[in-house]
Image (tube, rainbow, N blue to C red; front, side, top):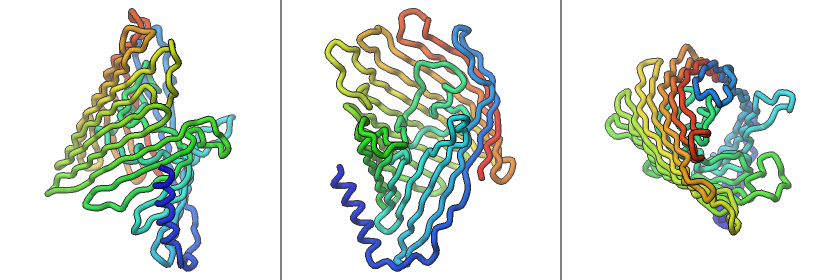
Length: 346
């Protein structure tokens, strides 16, 4: 794996060979987003309620230059806007090089599987398959068909797009290296995928096959979206080994749980507004200590309406039914909720 990624880096080095000084120095521009939400949720009384007001804000600095040989070199830095008393934090930071050879990225970022994964359409702020359900209610698990995560420092290579197809491969030698250059306690992480995007007489198609290996296990998933007219329909499914991100279980210890996640949805766009209906299901097999299965069903009805340049109003109405693996219903939860707010893009 290291040899493959080193070879891709060598391609970039060859592209730089003989390049004259860039015509313009890199100047960083400012962008990012701010999301502010207000919501209510009803769930079983034994579970603690969540905060009714939530937010997510990032400030992005980005810039690039094109060398005299046509190669583009750029950088992106994402600054978290909610550091509080703990101070602000960098979310992602990486450089990229674009050319006829494709694209190379080096730095702390999500990796190929996360960037290329296709999931069911969903336009609301909660979503059935994006992890935000847990911000509003208590669950044992949340469906996630692209569970790649963590902004480890890594090297990523994407091929050029050929006939609508593109492949990507990422390698991180330590998955805990996001904010630490000397850490040696994590696992290596290999992430990759193949995607296809095309249009046929007014019908758009997007398909992805992605996966990741870390520790003693892997996850892999497939997703597809089809757009025709104002409609987009899509679905995705993934399987995750219980040993993903883990070592081998010790003799006599509980085995790790394998998980299956699935989603399906449809969206409709009309001028400045779009609506979506998305269903997601997640299941974690039982382990040696329990006789049951963690199982969750959730549905999200989403709305997005563009009020003006960079200003979007979004809302979700959601329902969920979470059945825990413990005997009885002590860890079971079900309910519904509604969330609304504004997204500012700048």
